[in-house]
Length: 153
Image (cartoon, rainbow, N blue to C red; front, side):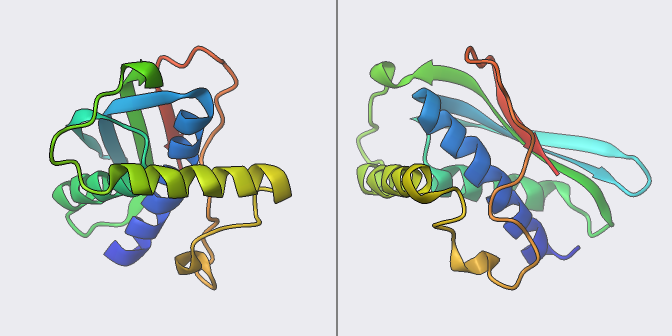
């Protein structure tokens, strides 16, 4: 797996986790990325947001930065993404210099609405075309009271 493929896998995991956040009306303050090498060496990094967020692009950007800090070029056996320190949407306060957050949130909500109405595969990013990677991957969480949300591949 090269860096570009790993970033695409992280995007797939992020799509799942961020959609779950929006569906349950939660924001996350902490993002964690974990990986396991082919020799079963496990490591992880995490980073806090200055304010809680549910945007796919913002979570993916941080996840890719964390992966780049972790990965030393060795083969990857398992890649995971987790968000935690969840808060309800009604406690969210925008930061003064937060970039295009409301615009991105509107786009994410529109995509979620289209997927709900026309099926999960109706809208996905073109970067997944001919990549062999599903646009949404990861485990499912059936519990409505989410203490943390995570996905692994």
